[in-house]
Length: 608
Image 1 (cartoon, one colour):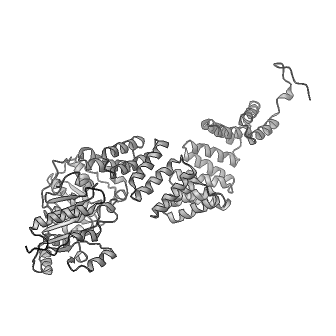
Image 2: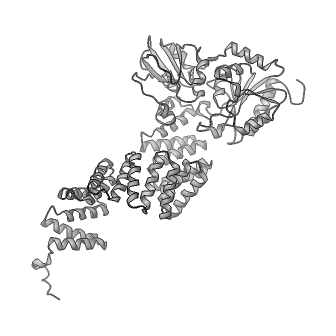
Image 3: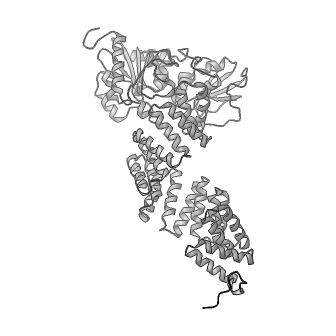
């Protein structure tokens, strides 16, 4: 053994290894996990040669691994300056930049690495990750596929390829990618969670729930899996359990705006409206541009009658699909009440469902009273019905060429423009009328009236976000049918099982399939003594025509019906029959049937 130098005394030249030897020792220390020793040796190299590429590169990697990303960027940038042709250094720089949220810069680093080494599989994979961050999913998919061509047995690119496919609306293919990742790595919690997302998109909610629960069995602190489990539970109508999952996710990750928004939806569905508002507002404090949270907040405020704040928030609907898909841009300015309209032409347009157009076309007369020429663009089934609307200059079918106009406004924005509150709703009816010739034709088809006539509708559009709760099974609606009344089905779209049931009922006349458009529906409604309907377009039509319309509502209804009242602020001739317990249509239908009996002053089994 050689003689040790005296403690504190001068060190011989041999005690400080030359740069090449120090680098070799530094790499060895790094490989055995002694990062401190590796860093000490590399810094010694830099003290001798400030632009030593290998030392800068390794120090950058060590800084990244020890939680010093900004220092890592500085070191790796010096490394690629010292040796611009090293693909790995560009790749490592990209990884640190992406970790800092600089995905555009990271993408440039990965692309530089791939120019130098087109077979650098990890750089293809990482490039895909940066493109995913930037929501450039088609390009990300291409990158993942190139990575997989080079490393087909790596589970991570299969998983992330699935993320890109799902974002591109291809969940069936995404599912295949996640399952390939899981075949390679069965305990891959992220792939189980993502598999659940794809299954959810395919409508396979029970399987989605199982996949999220498998992810949580592997990682109990996985906030995203708790959140997605809640989404699946909500789809299965297990709202209380969904709420618990969202809240578990928020314990793990308090700054989780999506979980706060969906927690608000669950609370809303449980009729805990004040708590729902608090949850939406917490989500918006974290992400002020979250259109879905703004829209959900609007629906809650409007339901509670807080129109002043509700209408403002409701404008965010135009950024949320499917409403957002129908939002359009015009050169002409949006009118929200700020500019005078005397002598101006304004385009009003329907942008949601048929019922919404029927409800809010009442504002045409209000806009015309400001001196405007009013154009109204509506869905094809409404064109004939609305052609004679008071105050209207011209009705236009959606998709037809537009004449010149000065301003535009979506129909659903008019309450905001007019600062509508509960006391200033333009509720004068009728504002829609039937066509006399069509009424005469339908009167002849029905023949002589020997009993009171009740028209009824039991379901709305399946595309409506709350259709599962607002629509009623036909068999349940038919419980109120009595031979003392002539029952007329106005249901336009009838599924196969309902068609079979209707065909078996001689005590119900179905005319829905014969209705060409809403002008036809209005003519039939005109001949009814009462219209009984769920919350759908026929409710708005009958209300706008000032016909007696009795509306069956779920316990947590659409915002326009408000809470805890039997009348409607929108339609003076409407009566509201609400579920008292969620899902209990039977008692609501029974109450309505009893009221019909009193209304027509008859009793079942007795002659009138």
